[in-house]
Length: 420
Image 1 (tube, helix red, strand yellow):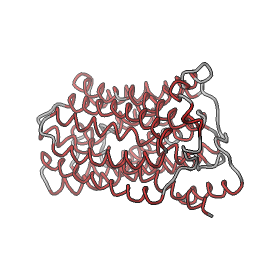
Image 2 (cartoon, rainbow, N blue to C red):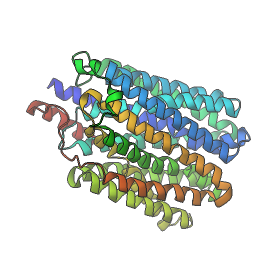
Image 3 (tube, rainbow, N blue to C red):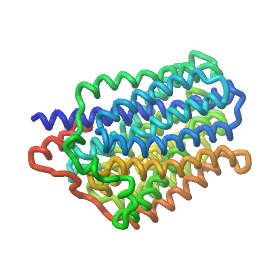
Image 4 (cartoon, rainbow, N blue to C red):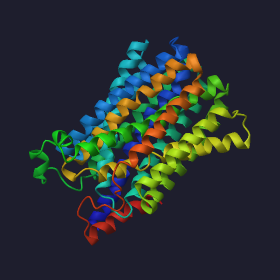
């Protein structure tokens, strides 16, 4: 019974962390049109600041994973949520592009640290039979966070002019810090680090590049790049694309974003189920192919407000979000427990570091080939590279990553019931 409670709390804590991560991080894309006006910045400058933040998140993710293996998942999760909440709110105080970049870099460090910590915490509670589904529900929390930030955007930008509204939007970013109180009182690791002596005796970072592990590490980095290059290159510029290129109003932009977010929720959950049914390789391939097709289709068809354009926006969310749903389960299965958070944090965030140049590319080349063509270029390259890579990695469907006695499996299956 106690394990059931611990499993449920781990699900809630990881979901809170990732959902609130999505809430704070997506604010920048929503605020960017107002920031460009308020600070007299170019699209290229906005793209580079997004890239700086993502590069910082790559460093933060590596450090977060190492700290989680050393000091515990739940403990580190609490501190990174507090950090990204504070730095998001402080973004509202920026007076020039340099200060804006500084706060986004600091927020990026904490933003990056959250994912490997929360993913490792939940993956170790999840049953091998339903890990894809469980981690899919975890990824869907990001969509909820994005939906809440979009709602905040609609409210704030409807009340204030764009050049100042973005500051109020970032101030709302302090609210996720409240989650710290829940985690501190209720959540604990499944494998306490003070009982796992191997965590302290082994150099996890060095082991990532051992003869036995290096091939997996390098290929997982490339997969992490593909997953995030698709996601960030599309969604970092989607609000700006709808507003500047398609000339939509705040209401029009919000409507399309909500349609896409609905698709994201469908994508996260459906991909999670398919990972458990079909396996990692086929499911990733399906969603990467779908991402490439829907990115091109969304850019090429007119955003008219008709059924077809809304349906394509929905599918864009399904596939562009769904392709990322399996990365938490898959990366957890590629690394042993003693170095799981370090491995997940390293490959996901080094991949993120390379993927960070996607938004910069889009920002720089918008003036040359147009924003839509720049987004398509990054999307197609990323999807193609990811499909090739996933077939070079092993199939890990159903892999047992931690002891699963009957009473533990009962508790783990409860996590999935929370999501449903």
